[in-house]
Image (cartoon, rainbow, N blue to C red; front, side, top):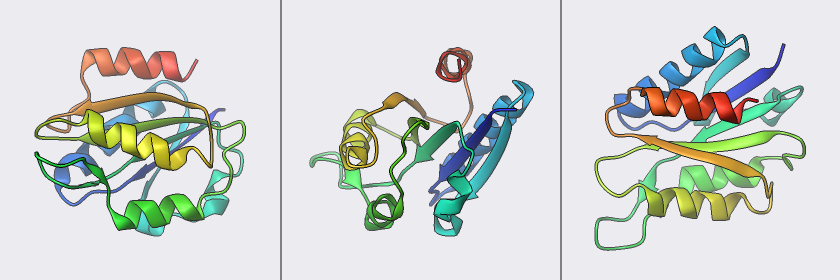
Length: 139
């Protein structure tokens, strides 16, 4: 059975809800899925993982470049190299999420060059297009 680790950073219930929906969807697709808050993550959890899905929280505002907050940056520094683990990024947003995802991907460059997928949700729900994209990601 393939294994997915979903690490989420949530400062509101929207991101947590989105993470839970992703985990539930992956379970229904026959994967072992473990949902871990960012502050409870331990690198050993990646042993045997096929997929890693990471959420993040942004600093900045509408008029400045969005970048991950310090908790997320510290988390990435603690990550081992992600050789062989397909990685995806996700976030929830009110407005303009692409800058944050681009910045998160940049931080992960030292850990993997293989960030294959990024997706977002405005309200924490997993839409049909996102489900189709996750199906493509886990192939």
